[in-house]
Length: 414
Image 1 (cartoon, rainbow, N blue to C red):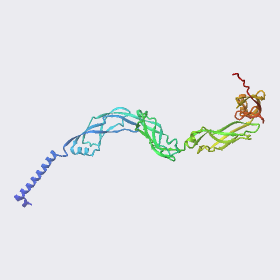
Image 2: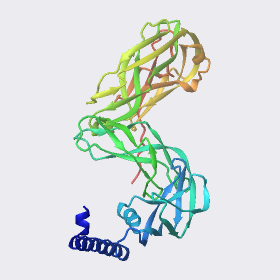
Image 3: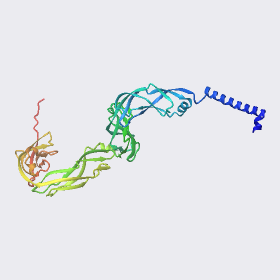
């Protein structure tokens, strides 16, 4: 080693190498400091940065915020600033967790920016208006669209649940009366079942975005024949024996829903139900009767009717001077009752006490039909029209004699 160091040429070479290395190091430092050195400070201005809000969205709503965007100025080491701008993971946050409803001026804060970078936000504060969210229960309305298959009709939609809750700020909530969904039944031959997404609309028919819970409901639209609900009439025949009377007859139901072709259903004003024979009935009784299909009706709901017949011991009552009414007289003849001479009847009626006690002579009609009878005397049976559940007290063959004669027409001189 000493021999190498005593050699002048070796020393010169080593000195030259060291000099070159020193030059390279010094030159590189100068380049870094004057160019892209990580030690150099950098200023970066970013415009139109959106503000991120932090608040309880289940209870509050931001109705306005001014401004919505800000300018952000970053100052720091160039490498750090570049890393922040390249990653774009930072936020300018508006923290409203500590404020309630009302007007507020709140300071913005940077989030996700390293502490060695100085951040300037322009403007530093924003004006925000916060409204409290309210909940309201509203009905669900289903609009049925389209036409079912020929001869069928869409029924009333069945919705589960029939009411839902909407949540919004008070100013918006007051505008909502219901939420709506839509179901198509076009060409349907059976019930249409589907899940329907709900939408809220204001009073002007414009859709309003708000929270609906639940936002989807189950809907079933029945598809049936045309129908209408009309009174059900029971035909009663026969009557209890002597000594018994009917106090009341009630039926359940008193109306029935009939299904069939549209022209069949439309012309029905009432439906003629089953016939009930009360001949020789001596006690109160309930009857369960099938309702028959008539007049091209395809279905009835319900298909049975229950009839309650209340039977009680009867009483009798004499009714005098019931006037006889003549119907069907020929205008060219004179017709009069000759027997009884008073043209009135005295009869005995029977029935339940509550009915007979209120019976008046005006409630009974005695009718003689003389239609198509020739001149002369005729003995005719008198038809008695009496209130419901009232009958003749004794077997009586009520008759009267009428005399029909030609009218005297006086001749007139020309």
